[in-house]
Image (cartoon, rainbow, N blue to C red):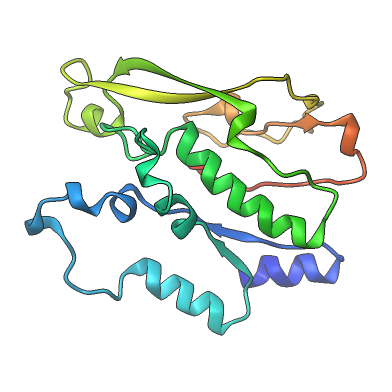
Length: 193
């Protein structure tokens, strides 16, 4: 992260690092006491302390997501460790708020611009790890834009997908928005992204 920060700074590129909350951080009340960590100095707190002390800019979306727990929908899938689109929305909103400080032309996003629906599905990755995907059902919360996005698929650069990478179709995603063509954004992400 320090290397990336310095690499970007040398090229006049703004660098941001987002810390996304694990499901147990948002819903600790569903974790049995015998599995709770008694030590508050977790890998997450170690990371944020290190980033702060080494002047690596980071955006922690935890409090923003945590503040939305009572919205009436779960923010994470029950049988999966990933958040759903509603949880991702609140995380994205926080990241965009920080980006807007440096790029005021970035528009705000509002939950009112989306229809919220739910869809039943088979168990998620936690159920799958237990080989019980078919035995458990889950409910996914989905956000659908009320007006279509002006962003369209763009041309990929053709980065080679590493051997045995399980999500080759999702390795490189390119979107182009003609309404804001003066800005470019590169996101290096994992499954939460």
